[in-house]
Image (cartoon, rainbow, N blue to C red; front, side):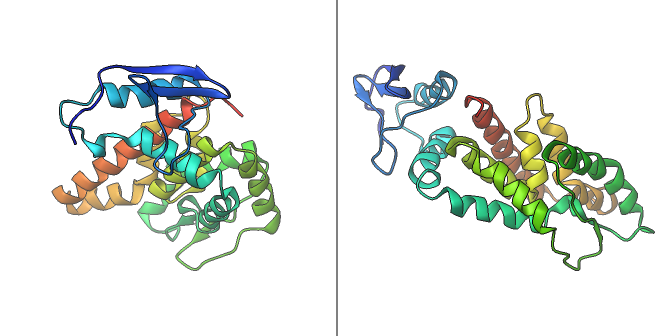
Length: 232
């Protein structure tokens, strides 16, 4: 598709901010007003449109796609997203360790245990740690407390969290990424600890490394999206 607009502007509207292409306010892919809750998010959306050349590249609209998902999907059925996220809590990567005699276990303890302990302290919960692959259900009290926290997130934060969690396979890492001042690269490396461990011993696979870089960029974009949304 050829570029069909000249000017891009983020303008204040009732209940938030909306991007205009020339004089036309944008709508989501579902046909709803693409109303952003903050000027910061609206500017991220506007920057994607400003950055287009004569031919529009649909793959470049990463923030637009997250905003549309928040408005068209998450806002409509937030409980579905919360249930999905709680499923990750049941099998959180940080909770499943190697056997204690395995050298990998020491690396997991060094990197994962502080992150898990911080989540427990911040959320007021307790996670079971497991050595091996056998599943152990988390306590009902833990899941209920986490549900209460997730249900208070606005649709935009919830949409960002869903992407962070699906990329890291860890609700704990996703929640940590929403915290102010979170070290995004450290969290991404923690999520990929086992992959890095294998690469140290057997060497890197170039195709796998390229796929991982794409996931890393998506992870960082989700953090930027979440940080552009007002707290609440």
